[in-house]
Length: 368
Image (cartoon, rainbow, N blue to C red; front, side, top):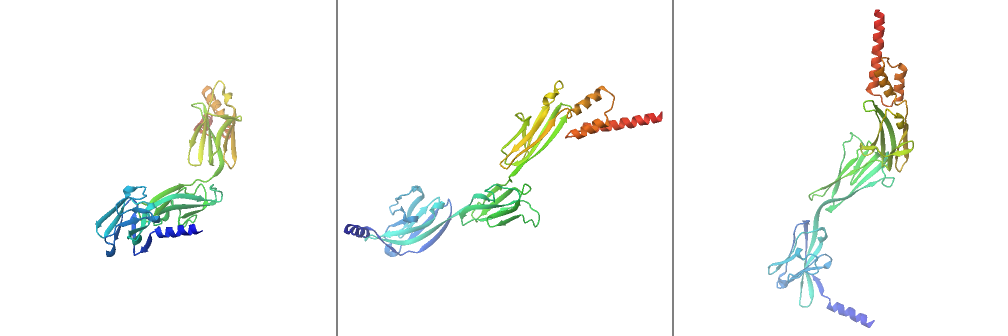
C-alpha cells in the first residue's frame, strides 16, 4: 500500500504541469489542401520554443523541427519566421486530420503552457455510400407493394439529398420523396425503374448514383408457332415474362432440347426460339408434344404445343396447288385457320384466289 502511494506521488512529481493561457481559432479547409496553424507567443514566452500537439494529444512536431510518432512525416513541417511566431504546416489534409490542435511552450520548471488552440474542420465533398431498398419481403420487390429507397451519403458539412425522378403524370402521388427517402406506393413492371440520388453540400463535386429496380414476377408463358413454306421450317417461339429466372427450357416428349436460341427483350422478358426442320422424306420425325418450361422461386410455369399432321397441312395445300388445277375447299381453308397458331399471308392468298376462281367460273357459265 505504501509502495503504491509512493509511485503515485512520484508520477505526479515527474508529470508536467499544464496551464492555460490560450485562445481558440477555428480553421475550415477542403480535403487535399494545406492547413497553417500560426502561434504567436506572448512577450513573456517570446524566447521559448513551441511544440504542436494534434488530436488525442499526440505530439506532432517539436521546436527542433523533428516529427514525433508520425506515420507521414513529410506532411508536417514547423516554421519559425519570427522570434515570437511558430507555425505548423499540414499539407494534403484528409478527413482523419480534423480535430483540436494546440501550441504549447515548456518552462524550466517543467510547466507546459497552452498558448493557442485550433479547431480544424475538414470540409469534404459529398460521397454516396449506398442506396438501400426497404420492402415487406426482405428486399424482394413484389408487384403492387410499397417500396422505399434510402440514399445514404457522407461529407462535411452533411450533404443534402434530392432525387431526380423519371417523368411522371401531373398529380401522380405514386412516387413521393421526403428527405433522403423515396417512396413508391404501388410498384409494378409499368412503374419507372431508374431512380437517381443526388448528394450536395456546397463542396464540389456533388455525387450522384442511380438505382435500377425490377419487380419480382412469377413466370408467365406464351407460345407462338410459325410455318415457312419456303424453307420448310416450323419456328416455335416461347415468350417468358419472369423475374428472376432460375431455369428455362424447351422439351420434346418430356426430353429437354439443347439446340435453342435465347433472346433477351428487356429486364424481365426472354424469348426461347426453337427451329424445327421438316424432312420431306420423313416429316414424322418432328411430331410430338413440345413443352416450354420456366421456373423461379415463386412457381414453375409450363405451356405446350402439339406438332402433328394438321400443322403440316400448309405443305399439303402448297403441293396440291402445284400438281392440280383443283382449288382448295372451304373445309380445307377453315381447317388451316383453326389449326395454325400463326396465319401467314399464303392462307389469305389462297382464299382470294379461290374467291376469284369461283366468281370467274360463275360469270363464264352465265355468259354461255
